[in-house]
Structure formats: C-alpha cells, structure tokens
Image 1: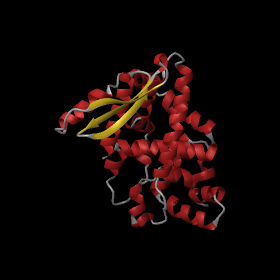
Image 2 (image 1 turned 60 degrees about the vertical axis):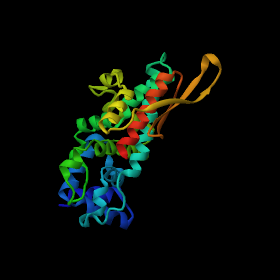
Image 3 (image 1 turned 90 degrees about the horizontal axis):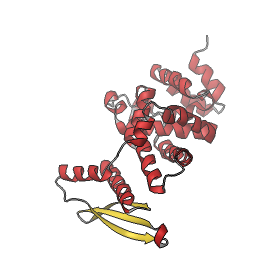
Amino acid sequence: MEPFWQKIITFAFHRPEEIKDCQALASSAFALKTIEFLRGVVEEPETNLKLYLTALTHRSALHDSAHLHLIESNQRLEFLGDSVIGLLISAYLFKKFPNNAEGELSNKRAKIVNRNSLAGFAMTLGLGEYILIGESADRHKICCNESALADAFESLIGAIYLDKGIHAANNFIIKHVIEHVNFNTIVFAEHNYKSRLIEYTQLHHLPPPLYSIIEEAGVEHEKTFTVGVTCTDQLLGTGTAKRKKDAEQLAAREAIKLLATS
C-alpha cells in the first residue's frame, strides 16, 4: 500500500523538484505527526502542504544536516501573518467597539496581538508540539518559547491567507483567537506599558524613561499627539493618539518590544 505521505504529495505537487523536497521532509515520523495536526486545524492543507510545513519550520532546522532539503524557515510567513492578524483584529475591534477612540482601539489590539497573547493562543492549539526544529536544537526550550510559539502562530495565519484567502484566515482567527476562552479577559485587561517600562529600567539599573511630545497635529478639538520615550538619550519608541496618555502608553509598548529583541 502506498504510504500516506506519498499520497498527499502526489496529490499536492506536480513539479518533480517539489515532490522530491516534500518527500524528504514528510517521510519523517515527526513530520507525519505535524501533517496530521495541520489536517485538524486547516481545511485540506494537502493542497499546499509545503507552504504549511514551512509555516511550522523553525530557523534551527535550516542548519541541521538532516534537513538540508529545507530552504526556508517560517520567518517570512511570520512577517505576513503579523500583518494579516493585525488587519483582521483591527476590523473586528472597529465594528465591536464603535464608541472607542483610536487610542483605545490601538490599546485593545496591542493586548491581543502581542507575543504573550499569541503564544497563549498557540499553546491552546498545542502548536509547540508540531514545530519542525533542527535535531541538534533543544526541542523543549524552543517549543515552549514565547517568541517561537507566537511566530509559528502568525506564520500559520500567513500560510492560510496565501493558500485560501482572507476569508479563511478570518475564520481561523475567529475560531482560535476571538472565540478563545480568554479573549475578553485579554481585551479588557489593564496593560500599563509605562509601568512595565519603568520596571525594566529599574531592573537593569537604567535611568527612568522620559516622555516628550514630538508632534501635535490637527485642529484644537481634534488634535493627535506623537510622543517619544527616551532612556540614556536613546529614542526607544514613539506613539500617536488623540490623548497624550494613550500616546505615551503606545510609545512605552514600542520601547518594550525593542528592548525585548535587543
């Protein structure tokens, strides 16, 4: 009997080089497990299997001799998925909260699409168990890593968008984000990024962050403020909102994101 993975690849790919590459990847027992997972969360992933496997490929796999056939990790798909989820969550919040100002909507979106929240959505899916990593890498460390989980979740959304379009991506987000048991708790939680930034500077023995208005735009009753936050004379982040306090929170959030990746 023809192996399961060969049936999938024969159906999904037509060019010989694509068949060869996917055969090399999908023939492993672990990749078969990943394919079964994909079939549970994506409708007919077989139509573009290589794309979905790429979405779950950690960059460590590219440097492993057992995976030399892999030519791309999920980093590019993560970039796309980040934009897709940002757009769809923005559209949902815009309709859901018609009385919220731009700053309030931005704060709600930030609480949903940050690393911590996205990693939580990924953990509910059990996504970490199916990330493809290099044999020499620490599987437990990577698959429980907040950044790796969030990247894989965004990458999967990017793959769904490319393969099936915005409607399918939106359905996935509704099911696994908006209908998530913790969604409302996340949306209405108080995330004080200014306090978090102060805690960071104190922990690392840095001077306290300073906020300053970079620009004011608009007529008097409809002004928007762009605020920058600096530490040791370095601009760490900027934020724009209709209220100075909201702009400061957005600037602090950007600063925290920068510091977390530096």
